[in-house]
Every structure is written in C-alpha cells, then in structure tokens.
Length: 167
Length: 167
DNA sequence: TCACTTATTGATAATGGTTATCATTATCAA
DNA sequence: TTGATAATGATAACCATTATCAATAAGTGA
Ligand SMILES: [Mn+2]
Ligand SMILES: [Mn+2]
Ligand SMILES: [Zn+2]
Ligand SMILES: [Zn+2]
Image 1: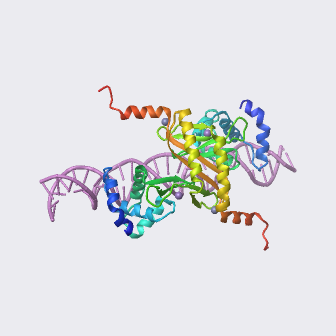
Image 2: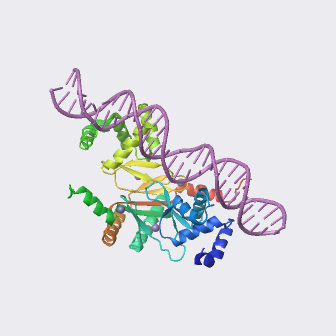
Image 3: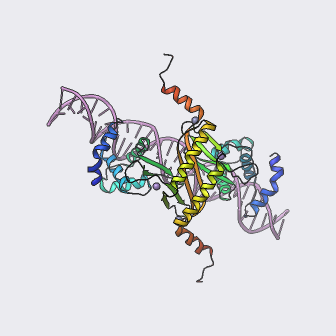
C-alpha cells in the first residue's frame, strides 16, 4: 500500500475488470507483495507475509488468487523440485526482465540470470520453429533450468567430504 | 523376463552389487518394464503394469525402487505439471538417446524430440560455462521443456472456438 | 546345502501441499 | 442505496508421496 498502489491502482483495476474480475483487498495485497520482492515465494510464503498486515486473509484465497494471476499471465508459476509451487511476477511489469533459473540441489537456493538470455532466446525460437514444423506442435512457452551446487554449498560439501581436522 | 533379462542380468547384478544393493524380483521387473517402453510412466503406471504379472509387488516398493534408480542415475525423473512424477530410463542404456520434451498443456501428451539437440547442447554447455564462471555455480544437469498444443488439440480447440455448424 | 546377517519388502498409517464445499461477505453497476 | 453475484475463508476432503515396522528374502561364508 505504497507508491505501487497509488501508481497502478487504476491500471490493475482495469486489467481485472476487463476480464470480469473484481479488484479486492486480498488481490491488491498479493500483487503488491509480489511486486516489491524478487524472491520466488510459495503460497504459504505469500500467506504468511500478507497475514502480517491483514490477518483476515485466508490461505485458500492466496491459492485462488495466485492461480488467477497465473491464468491471467500476470504471475509465473514454477516447480523447483521442493514439493511446492513457487510464484513470481511475470516480466510484463516494468523493471522485470525475462530470465531463467539456476537451482541449487543442496540448499534449494534459486538464482535468476538474464545473461546469455539473448542467445538462448534465439536458439529457442529457432528450435521452436523447427519443432512446430516437424511435429505441428504450437509452442506457447518454454522452460529452461540449470541444476547444481551454489557457491556456498560447494564449499560445504568439500569440507564435509574431507577428513575432519579437529578430532 | 525376456531377452533383456538373459542379456543383462549379469550386468545389472554387478551394477547393483557394486553399490551394496541387492537385485530382487521387483527391481528386475521395474527395470524390464522401463526398458521395454518409451512412455513416461508415473509410479502408479509402473505399479499397475508390474502388478499384472506379479500381484504381490507393492506400490511402496515401486516408489522406493524408482527413487533408487533415479539416485543411481539409471532412471530420469520428470515433472510435467500434472501433479505426479514421471519416470523414464536414462540414455545410458543402449538404444536411448538424450532428448528433450514437448508437453501439450491441453491433453498432457508428451513428445520426445532429439532434433536440434546438438545445437541445444552446445548452447547449453556454453551457457553453463559462462554461468559457472559468473556465479561460481557448479552445474550438474539441465532441463529444457516446451509447452503448447499438440497437433490434435489444436484442431479440437479450433473446432470448439468456432460457432457450431449443426444447431 | 545350511544358517546367518541384514537389505528389502509390503500393509498400513501418516504427511503435507493443494482443492472442493458452502454459508457469509464484499464489490460494483445501476 | 440496492441487488445480483463474485469473492472470501473456515473446514473438510483429496491424493501423491513417505514413514513405520514386523515379516521376508538375498547373498555370504562355512
Ligand atoms: Mn526468477
Ligand atoms: Mn522422454
Ligand atoms: Zn546451495
Ligand atoms: Zn494435446
């Protein structure tokens, strides 16, 4: 309920009304939260955070709203393999760039990267063209993720796999 | 329990024993099943299929065995967004090639493709190199998937979204 | 071949993220 | 302000996957 709200209240209102949806407090709060973070929040994360200011917003509504936002193309939904869906504002909003993710298989950390994106996008569009021709498959979107060990976990793992110094 | 068994029984036995694992009937049956299909089976799929010949093999064992095979690198585990994990023999076995997947978001159909793989792999390895340098992230594997509408579903959707002729 | 150690199994219950229900409430066009 | 109805939230249900644990079976060595 800061600059974002004042700035875009009308825009969001129109966006929702245009689809026949109503703009409600829970929806505003959730959009605002997603807008001011760069993290990849789970439904529960969103619930807990929103709950701080508005303890009357239920978890069910959070799930429903997130699903609605995904369906409207406003939010992206990801599965990083930790058993819960994670959400992030799509790149349509200003200041967001299309990016891909690296996932640490040890600690679950998720790293955004936009480097090499141009080359990736080019290859992807070339591949998409070839695939849709060969299989007559109409591609709407893609998913690219890298899995491995983050900087910190590499050190931890190495330390653990080496004979301990003390004792 | 056909050619595959005779052909590779010894090899599999060694592979398992080398890790301290025992080779059991359920494990053999599951490997054989995965070896003779090109589908992307869920744990329940595997259970039902194996159950036809050996009704005493339990679902729990199927889950455990699949997880073990994944951990040994023999089987690949995927999430195609339908709420259940799906498994497929890794490309280590003869006759299997590394491939990526297209997922139909309407009917759930999954299409393997190995075309363009070489270019993809090259870009991936280049990207991996850049990323691991920039973020000091040690990449162990990647995931590429395309989502969209398969040939058949395109027709269905078009038919539905057009005014019906009869009536 | 036999016995012994222990990895493996499978029936069952539990877990946990996500959905379905449904009575109540809030939005917004008129 | 009002009325039609979209949205909410407490609750229960769902369902894929895991944890438990006593019973079984695989492999080893005699
Ligand atoms: Mn991100
Ligand atoms: Mn495949
Ligand atoms: Zn890590
Ligand atoms: Zn389809």
